[in-house]
Amino acid sequence: MTIQSHEINTIKIAEVISDNIIIQSAQDGLDLMGNIYYQGFDKVILYEKNITPEFFDLKTKIAGEILQKFSNYRIGLTIVGNFDKYESKSLKDFIFESNKTKHVNFLGSLKDALDNLSK
Image (cartoon, rainbow, N blue to C red; front, side):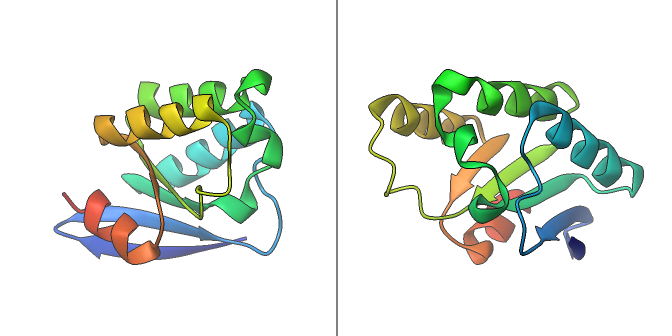
């Protein structure tokens, strides 16, 4: 795992880069968030491919647990990926509602993520 630092308008953004799944549980999400916070970052970009597929099955409650922790600690999170492939209506609604809050977002590209997080 590598953390690429981006700084836009004095906002420190961590882009987490890995070839492996790094988030398999709520505890993994908490550990990553603590690591990012300790390094002084304000916001985080994760890639869909680095998150367990169970995250996108809302019945597992992994997504809710992880996103709640990021919200509680006020660390902005953007997950970058192709979410059109998921057919679950509840997941599509979840993504739609998350994107309205501006605290946790699901976007299609790094550029969109950086633009969104720099506001």
